[in-house]
Amino acid sequence: MVLTKPRLRILTIVPAFNEEATLPSLVADLREKAPFADIIVINDCSTDRTLEICGQLHVPTITTIYNLGIGGAMQTGYRYAHQKGYEIAVQVDGDGQHPPEQIMELITPLDKGEADLVIGSRFIQQNSYKATLPRLVGISLFSFVTSCITRQKITDVTSGFRAANRKTIDFFVRNYPDDFPDAETLILLAFSGLKIKEIPIIMRPRTTGISSFNFTKSLLYICKTSLSIMAALLSYNGKEKKTK
Image (cartoon, rainbow, N blue to C red; front, side):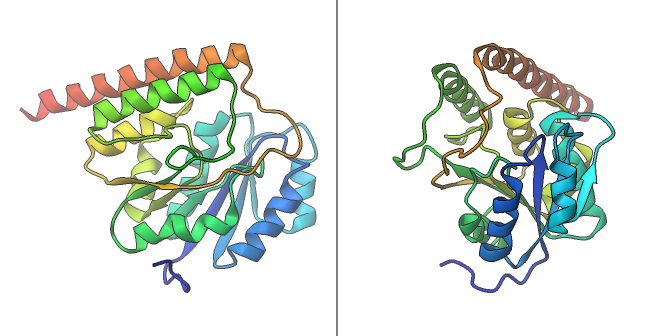
């Protein structure tokens, strides 16, 4: 059963780097299809008209002093949510591919107490989502590794369409990776006893611009994510030893 009147304070966090073309339609969609949620755009030191567009749209915006990347941008958003007392924070990427009409489905398990973090997965159900071969390899590899480590099946570790409750927001304020946070955040949450749940979503096709993931960046993603997973495991093992 999907909620019709959310009873919690909800914030939609939109990390944006050079998304001047997609922001007007995205903000309009969020306001129409998820009017129960406030919006904050984290303008990650964009070099295009992203900041100007945010001003024209009268949408609250935080601009970073230098490009932080997705990890730093999202931690900025979680800190804002924490300071303002929001009980749910939803990540919606600035490229317009995440469906605002499915935000209600994303937050319902949080409201019911079924999860602390909900992920919108592109792979639970068959859909038209397509990615380059290197990106698909990376998604499959790290979804498998993360599933093994957390002992829970994760089908879409790279999905940026996520909803976090207050416990997870507070956790992310203190523990959020600066670079390539996809798998590491899930592992850290699992090690801390927080519950993760996936629901199926249908991703929209990108209408403007191109993905930042080319062949070289896909290889870099695989390398950096591997290192971040190792760091998370080492950190967890170190904490375990101290408690013994």
